[in-house]
Length: 178
Image 1: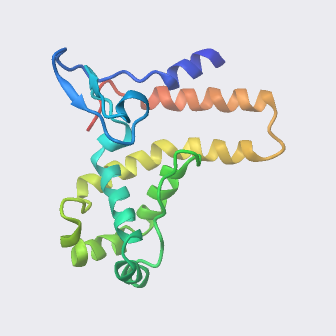
Image 2: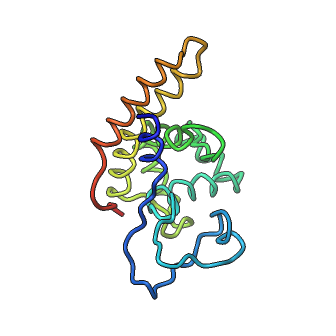
């Protein structure tokens, strides 16, 4: 069962594209793509391919790069978003959680200062996707916190993995919604 869980979570089925189609790979991908290569026949782009996540990350970086805007953000929103980190478990969950807690304040701030962000302001559809992503990631974040403690045994871990696999299977959809 552990092998099945591991396999299920690591398989990334690319979207079907025409064999002759080439998709330029984002610069933050690993391997050949980082060296400027192209990915043939695949459209999987990770979080960069999900517009709502890309916009949220762009907002966080935009704020980090401007002291003036960062101070205005602190006055209006009173909570830093943070930035996802590939080595920190549940970092996307935490960024999305903070954004959803301050949705009204962030929306007002983006209405006032969104011109500088160009196309990176969050729409109603983006907020909806962030909410769904938050709901999906919540059990994974909880499992990680539970397993960090000294009380976690192998049998408890197997139960956690069974529960996460069930959650994953129950939420899996036939097509990618973005």
